[in-house]
Image 1: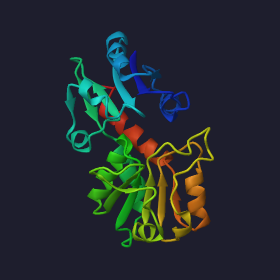
Image 2: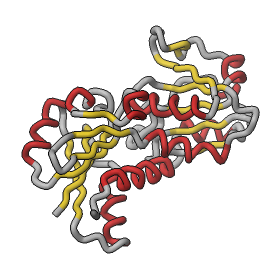
Image 3: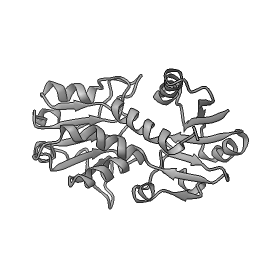
Length: 247
């Protein structure tokens, strides 16, 4: 029995386990299982790999997409360029190879909504997922600027910096923070929503709830709003193709 799973912290809510369970049922896949590996510290990762018989692949979620990298034997080129991993393949020889399928899922999800006017994006948050988002947008020739609580060499704006002019200049805004995730559904990034227009795209990587407060406030301004569900499905299928477990 081949085993797959999700590595993360506090992931009982996660989409992945249910998604793959349904996939296996619908497609008649009977020799593969998928489970959650909910760990409080990345140091436990080594024990999981060592002690889980027939483990062939893992998805990786918050907060381990970056800190898992030193534990891997090799990175796929895209994962190396991005600096974050959300998929791990365990080879027959026991080597751990890191990939990034978030970039594929995000790019395929946002592409149908893009117009020539969408030239610049604000990326809220600086974690592993944000790196995949920026990688994808740059491939689409869209200029990206990070927004975080503190300035740094790669963070152009703090939330306090944001004003109506900056919002008007960036017609794509992507929430890569966990703000608004169930059960804390009243939370949202602190940006000047009054400056949002129908020309804006608001993309939230969160998928539970389906419409976060961030997206709801954008919708009130007639912006195009997209949640993270399609991105998740696309990256999950890409991960499945990488694992190639049916061979």
